Image 1 (cartoon, rainbow, N blue to C red):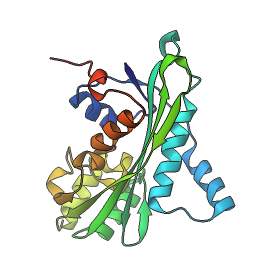
Image 2: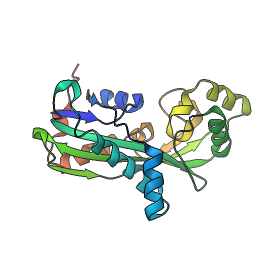
Image 3: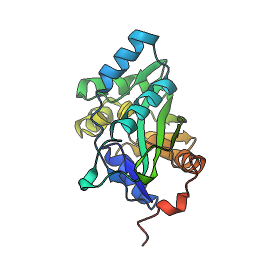
Image 4: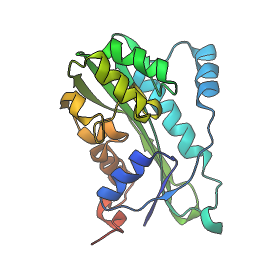
Length: 213
């Protein structure tokens, strides 16, 4: 049984590999900013769990007609998204150094919540048989960094492409004092939540293991 990952996130890919799964990765090509703007224009501001679920579902559904390597999708399709909530403000990827630096000064020494959305489509047999999803959240407490540490971290480029401008499994790890909740949620998807979703759709989690040894 195969898992198709509707994401180009290196962190999500590595996380699944560490859990024994080599997914088929497919770029969803979703214009996230336009999708969020359109939804909020029609329905009002999105809360953190609603935002990550909206984008996770859009990403999974965007690749259902794809044929990776010329073969139709036959398995489970996973879409995911993450956002960081701190001080009442919701942050995605900063993209620019000045934005990452500003966010670090805002969250320095504080605690925030990293939300990860999950949408799993049962596409076994080449057709949609069902779909489930829900968000997961983990609390993240930061150390007190001085300006030199913040500047050095931003200069590495790592914070620019991750929600909240930090990682827990790479250079940013030493700046995290505590994580409460499923730690994989902070990396980009909650493995425990994903297992539950697979089982809800009638799948066997261990049948996804394809990286034994």
